[in-house]
Image (cartoon, rainbow over all chains, first blue to last red; front, top):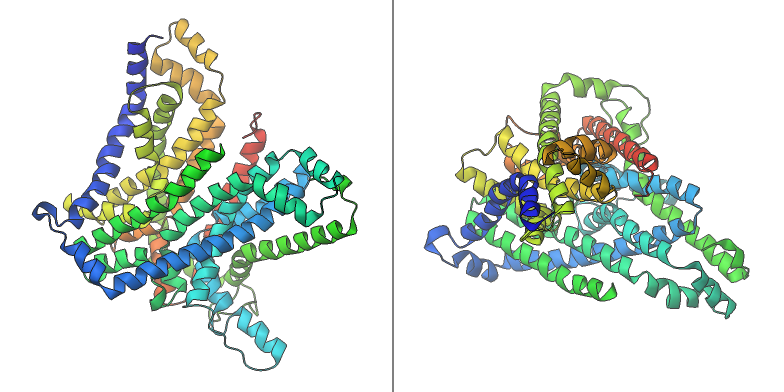
Length: 274
Length: 271
């Protein structure tokens, strides 16, 4: 095929979706930037007001703390599952895989509702503890930081399992055998073989989980208290409660900036790995 | 990591510990579903687990209240229309991206895939502001457009992966025999892509059906989808009907999950 025909072919297939993407996706995203600077007036009022507001600074640090801790927790839980899956025979692996896929496909609302029932003041966990200790237990497990972390970790863990499992399965088995033959103890094998060789999966999983965690909206709104609001909830607050669209847009721009900052080093690392 | 080279008792012990930990994590992951489904079959005036007596009362209440069936139908409508549009648009685009080299290819692909990275609250805000300017906020059209852009990256990724597994010589052959570009696409590419098309369609449908954040920003009082209704219901009153709705959503997820697993098995090339 010559070059002109190649271009014509590509244009015929790609043009409709490209036009829609430009008008329905790129335009709204640019419109956020435009709104954050108050339209044609071009003022940085929203940004300076945000940076000076205690609410914004508190929400920013809450977002970072929650996102980083939830990512770390899901990395830990996801790694445990991935190690377990990697050890199974292919048949049993696909069976256990369903136990990860089903939660992966479950709506975040279903999870939040279930956790209000499980973790509520007279919820399942407190009931069991009351029964076990023989005295009334009413631990506050939702509408606070614990609830948000439990909900987010539950949602994010499957996203770590898939990439980590892929890297674990790619490790040549003879490396393990060699390490064992040379007398390495299991903990040493894990430290010097498994962990470094699964690093690409860890990085891939961590970057996707971190990106999602920074933008979480539903879980902090339903399982968190007022002090656990994240930047996404602040966007909603400015859009619906105070109707200050420029502020909402400025928070959105800063949130997007944070996401880009968070994945940039990780994607550089990933490129270096490959 | 086969078992045969592990003889040392310490490593057996560690493996056993690892499996125990893994089972604890599986329990944690599945706990929400394990609690919600039995509750949905409980009675209407208790919110406890496990329910003391079982009935279909909550499902009856759910299906006989227009406050819930309206959003259910709205979700089904939005998800169906968005899925059709995103496939009509995304499948040819995926073919163009997978098979041709052209200037701006990376940029176009990046733009279409960007919703994977951009937090959905940011895209939702963009749609909200832009659609208010266009005066279509709160309409089904706004919801469909939002969902189409939100599901496009997933469709694109899945279809590109499907196309890359096809033998390109069949396409060259068809064109040498005189088939035009679109005829070749319709008669040679699409029939081979059927498993990917079903997979991508189901994925898009489920994502749209479950989507909350964008719908929360774009829907109006008469166009609320099921997740939007559920979100406000969980926020304001914890009604046991939500357990029935959750079970319905989980059932749909389970069906999609099983179909996807089955599709993966029937595809000869591993995917």
